[in-house]
Length: 351
Image 1 (cartoon, rainbow, N blue to C red):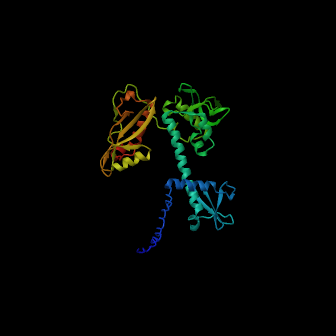
Image 2 (cartoon, one colour):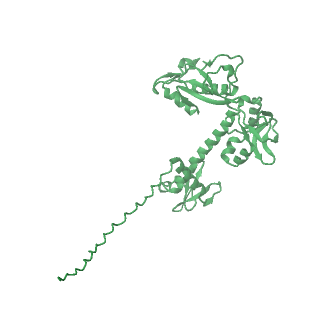
Image 3 (cartoon, rainbow, N blue to C red):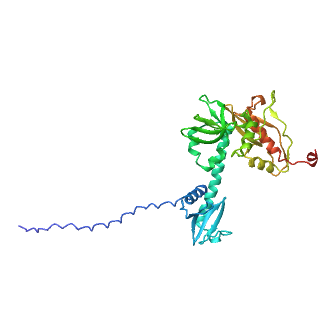
């Protein structure tokens, strides 16, 4: 019988483990570069830094001085940047290296911010007057300590506002202060100090003040001035029986260039669009806009002024009989102010 060979089974070949691929690195998010704040915000930040800067000294004139490095100190005197040296001597000019420093930059930003704040306060009170808005006493209490607000509010004629929104001209006076307990402090038409027990007051437009001449005489006698153009504002009472749609009194005012007329209108605070200088007023619970034609050609071309008219909130033309007293007066004031800047011929001057 043949012998058979027993063949040992072959061992399976060992496979080398596959080399592991290096793990992909997760992308690292890079921080986006910080966006620079808008110039107006940067200026406000510098102004805030100047306001928070510790005052190194206060001199006999009441000026506060802050350190500017190298022994110099800086201050603002009537809006002008001034410097003094380590011995306290005031310099005739600010050294160049000091003017280029952070302290000077912050003080100048503070000065510019204060000027803008003054304009904003004056503009806000002017809007209260043009819109005959009722101002809560709490608002006056909140802003009265701010010198910018006090300047424009002090000596303005104010009237008490009743619960129904009506103006009580019997309770009125030159605004002199506000007290949480006593009320609104005024000087009345007789020159006497009084307190108005009212929760709201209004700053009436002068065309709505019945005894305007009396108030003008009072401020002259007291030797005080107003921070807004109220008592001595140019006013134009509306004549009775007007039924037309426009005023032609200020037509044909010649300007050598349209840009001169536009510049004058904007300098006076009026908006210009579509060839018109415009003035929007809230009068009698509604909106009316005065429009005075100044031209719509090339800015460097000659132009002549046209008619003065009014439209309502939906831009529909208004008859003069439907225009309120404040809107009429302000429209006439706008047109007459722009017309006054026209080119005046020698023959017109002679007459």
